[in-house]
Length: 258
Image (cartoon, helix red, strand yellow):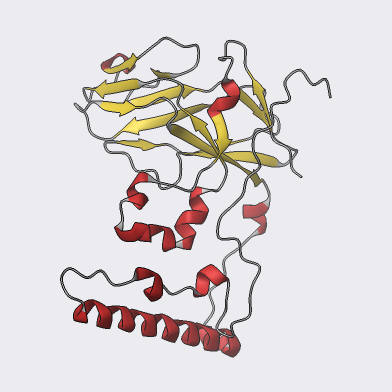
């Protein structure tokens, strides 16, 4: 197991352990799709659970007037905390100081993003990659306001960041090569068979939608193509296929000398 240590910094709240958790699969906008159909997109659900989320500690609101100085972004916090949102960089960037100093194993860093597929109006998370295998100083999480003169609210307990480890050498050791699909006849056959099944499913869905009465909602469960969810290739051979990530719960080992 690759252990990521999150050292709780001085001044952090007593319940700091409640501010970091495995990323959760549910999203409000996905819940609102018909029959929660968005969850049938396995890549979306997998990304939702990839890593650990860091939560906002306090109800807060932001308003930016569009000017560059950091003093032109106004931050309201329900209560004052050592760690929380503030205006620091200017240009409409909201900065969260986090109560954790992370340490990853050698040659691993942390990818830091906003929570995956978590839509917010008028503000966007800024991604980063941190050399947490040696850096002895905490990083911040930053969001950039994209439309001035709007009041933007974050609730306490709302995820503001996602972190997951990444091996440093993987990208440099990887490469993309272009090939003609015909160079691999067996793979091409699987591609065409897979596509034919998806088209058949799509035509059946369209047929049922056209014949359904206005008050009738076709059974989406019977219309869903499950090839990818099952990890089944064109030959129906089951693959090792995780549809979501199951990150380990955070273990609070404070006070443990080992």
